[in-house]
Picture 1 (spheres, rainbow, N blue to C red):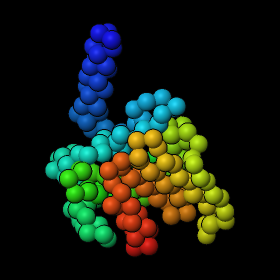
Picture 2: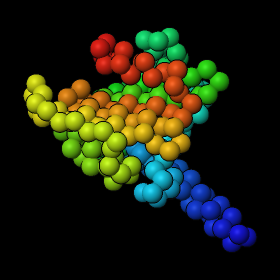
Picture 3: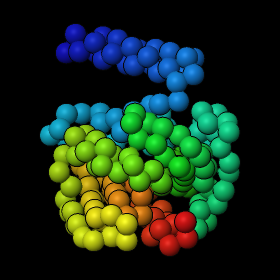
Picture 4: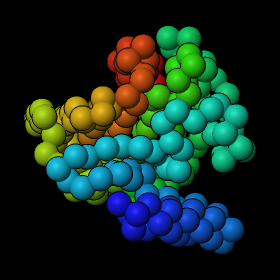
Length: 185
């Protein structure tokens, strides 16, 4: 037990140093999904460097070129445009904040050319979805996939809408914003 704690501290420090090196080097690419555990217990702890539970001010500090907005449901939200994570390009990413729970919803629009790679990345990080539907879409085959994770996160991917939505473990009150944004955006 005594060896595990120093190892995890060293590992955490290494991750922080690596992240800071990317920021200092002007690297705009951060791995979008960082499962905190192995494939037997997938977990989404953050998206593009923003952790679930982080405050609005923390997100604004990380992405100073973003802009404040209000979600369709009325929650505080913060939008960033044209950002990449790994090999996936996002035209917009909106972080929504639940009352006293920090950031709890990610609503991201990805480039159509990133759809296949993003789905492969999600399956690799989270395992097979609990539900997956395919069908004919307007411009390409439509794939809808949903993951329900052990810590309460909900991940929804839709290739026809070019949308990825991730609901954090304390964001249930924001769930209806996913549907509302799908019709408005």
